[in-house]
Amino acid sequence: MASSTEGMRRGRSTARSATVDEAEEATAGPDALDLSGLNAVVGYALRRAQLAVFEDFIARFATLDLTPAQYSVLLVIGNNPGRKQAEIAAALGIQRPNFVSMLDELERRGLAERLPSATDRRSHALVLTKAGSALLARARAMQDEQERELAQKLGPGGREMLVALLQRLM
Amino acid sequence: MASSTEGMRRGRSTARSATVDEAEEATAGPDALDLSGLNAVVGYALRRAQLAVFEDFIARFATLDLTPAQYSVLLVIGNNPGRKQAEIAAALGIQRPNFVSMLDELERRGLAERLPSATDRRSHALVLTKAGSALLARARAMQDEQERELAQKLGPGGREMLVALLQRLM
DNA sequence: TATTGTTATACTCTATAACTATA
DNA sequence: TATAGTTATAGAGTATAACAATA
Image (tube, rainbow over all chains, first blue to last red; front, top):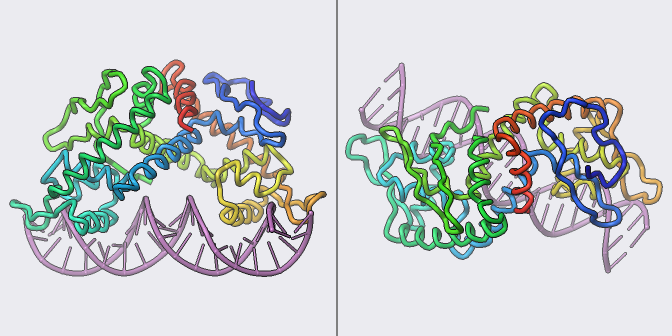
């Protein structure tokens, strides 16, 4: 159902085995647009939800001056100290060239370090500094708080259900 | 194409109430990284899932030469013919200045048109051309097919559950 | 004075080619 | 020959200021 306006709304198409209809936007303003077609699209809902969650994340982490990407880098280095740049970058889906300036910045701020590898003089072993570990601890606590608030929005078991569903898409 | 070849595991997330559970045993290879901390983060899962779904979308829509953004614009114009640029753009979360070149391109391809408004000489009434409607119909069918495949990945009721959970985050 | 569409601009992300020094 | 880190660069995507025409 749905469709605030009568117009053209998926008239034909009898084969709808997967049920593409169910989302619906209640009444909004007087001249509100019909977005029913978009709201049923998984990709669109994913994009909007991701933007909303990231926006919230960025606002929270403003005090730590950390972007989501920087947080993920600190987290992965912290859990995997001594790994090569290429390994960390690949794990995060970051192109190696783009990872250079990210590390430059984290190193400049004294949060991470590029140590010489003992076995391969080409590679760098990434580690967190003490300051980096300390900041990561604060960031983790902050992120846990966001996770708790998201869990509340999502209802009982909703967060775990959501993550499980998202994993199926990757 | 072929972005990110990261190595993510499929941690079984045993449900735990509201607090962040970050104890997932990563059935790891010899030198696989520990990403358990990230995999429990809703925002990160959202981002990766969104990228995966969009990548699939882009590959499918390559034959129609439509990006996800262009598809959303055609869809919303089709369901809301005669609306102003600013209205369509706002509904999609697109900045008005950035919407200009998008419309230029759709108009250049003969898919959409900027008609003079009958009531306000400043504004343009957006409509689809016949070719635009025809392309949109093909795109919709293509998108329905993706939705069906996603639904299969997500299991019985999974797609509807996912969309409902995502709506709670916006 | 406010709004619509537009131009110009800038900043972030992301992607690729190519260099260097090692292996 | 291949790999790790790097440089340079190009392309999207997104954000804001400002202007002309109109309300």
